[in-house]
Amino acid sequence: MDRFNVAVDVVQNAGDLLRQCRLEESEICQKTGHQDLVTHWDRKIEQLLRNEILTAFPQDSIVGEEYPPEAHRTGSMTWYIDPIDGTTNFINQHQNYAISVGCWEGSTPLFGLVLDVERETLYWAKRGGGAWQDQTQIHTSGRRELSELLLTTPGLQYTFLEPHPYQERMIRLSRKVRGVRCLGSVALELCEVAAGRADLFVTMRSSPWDHNAARIILEEAGGAVFTVDGDELPLDQKSTVLAFNAMELKDCILCV
Ligand code: 2AM
Ligand code: CA
Ligand code: CA
Ligand code: CA
Image 1 (cartoon, rainbow, N blue to C red):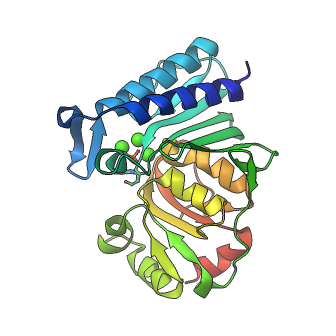
Image 2 (cartoon, protein in one colour):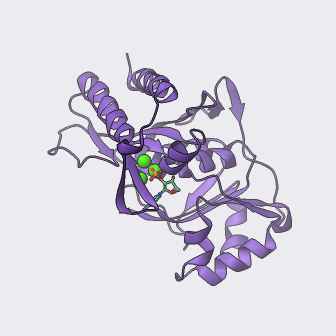
């Protein structure tokens, strides 16, 4: 099996496990505080993904949220995996969370998979092959007027309420667009833009495992992804993220 098929298999199996699991209160821990949580299932699913990927492709590197990277591997392939994107939703809602797996060869994207676990919907893209929601090809929206755009962001507090260098700009932007939505999952929100149900995405804090799979899907759907400053999004570092339904919107949004 090639990497893409291995990835689809392991992501679907992991999704089946999560859909059936019953989360116990004792399985929830704080990482940096009460708004930054991890569960036994985040770790278990990441272990499962790592084991399956490394059994099939032992030279590949894996960058995941819950475990440190292993010793340096010789291959040029890197997988960015988030076992549960939207852990808070997983805990409180048991919906609106995703498994995110992206594979890159050096700085070249190969494919991205984002499984909306409870809806049993798989977003996926291979480089040059378009973006797909299950068997249906998806495209970003054609909206170009600021006043018609829907902005999605994972948490109101980080984007609009807590002080940061972009706060005023974000508040101005929120007043100019048609509306703001918060889903609570970076990967699923980028897929919302890819599928044309939202038009813009912004977050002040995102890590490679949060966005590297979905950015491939969004770019294949016609969208564009940058940092909030409009710079190229780094592959291997935490950063802000600003994503558009089309590259054309970039100048207009950066000048708000
Ligand atoms: P996570 O669920 O994998 O932690 C909303 O919280 C979104 O922001 C989720 O996609 C979440 O990913 C992501 N996120 C990134 N950094 C975070 C942090 N420090 N605390 C909570 N969520 C974070
Ligand atoms: Ca987390
Ligand atoms: Ca995440
Ligand atoms: Ca996670």
